[in-house]
Image (tube, rainbow, N blue to C red):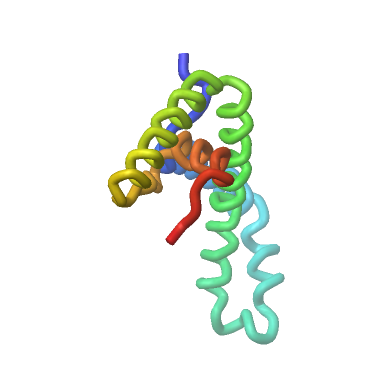
Length: 126
C-alpha cells in the first residue's frame, strides 16, 4: 500500500478539497465580518480580489502542509523506493559525465525531487 503521494498533481488533488472545505466554512460563517474587515481604505474598491485571495490562502496553506507531510512520509516509508531512485540517478549522472550528456529533472515527481536533493553533493546545475 502506498503511504505517500508521488506527483504534485496528486498532492494538489488532495490539498484543493481540504483547503476549499476550510475556505467554504470560513466564508459561510464569517462572510459579513470579513467584508467589514476589508471595507476600509484601499480594500474598499478592490474588495472582490481581496476576498478571492483570502479564499485561496487556505488552499495554498493546505498544499504547503501536505507537501511537507508527504516529504516526511517519503522519508519514513519510502526508503526502498528512494534508494532505488538514488541508484538510478547516480548511474545516469555517471553516464552523463562519461558521454557528456545532460540529465533532466522530472519536475512533477516528488520522489525524484527528494532523491535529487538527497544527492546534491554529487552534482551541480549548469
